Amino acid sequence: MNNEELQNALIVSRRPRKDNEFIYRQHSSICHVNEMLEYIGKITGITIEPIDRDELPLNQGFMGWRVIKDD
Image (cartoon, helix red, strand yellow):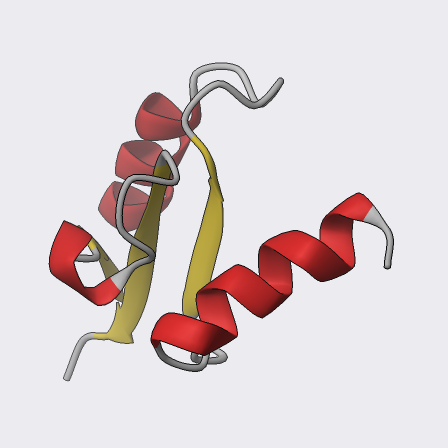
């Protein structure tokens, strides 16, 4: 099992990842993701909100966002 499969298995053991969610480790190499998501939310018809930590694997350092299409 490679590292990506292991991380996905950790998420699925808590609950399946939804198609409108993006999850990565807090210390990943993605830079300025918060600013990017805020920008996308301001210029499109979508809302990007954080996923509650209790929905993700405990003590694994994950955080994520949920994308919702505005009405």
